[in-house]
Length: 146
Image (cartoon, rainbow, N blue to C red; front, side, top):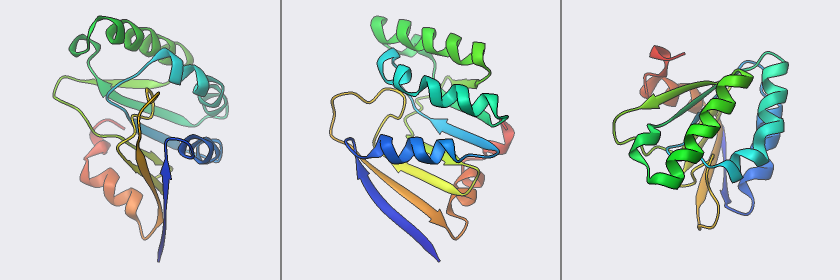
């Protein structure tokens, strides 16, 4: 049995932050784009996770693949993540997935760039149960990173 819920850009972050704060072991976020503005809103959450021993992984595009302003922002945020203990994996391919896996039990997937969303209409699906998060983790072969 599993439970699924839909969220948009106005409702996503409130539930996502709740899920993050309940994480006990690991958080994996795939967000091809990263901006200062969005990440600043999540900094305290990431810092709390790291302080309680939760492993946090971010998979993102190589900043060199972005336009100038986006490149500088992504580089700054990656430096911040590394400073606080978030492990960042930079992809050189055309990475475009937007998802998060929390404790391999909660799966978020959809169109919203978790670490950069600002002014766009988006949809995200939250799925819990039936091993969906673990299946996605395995399908993406994330064990090679984590």
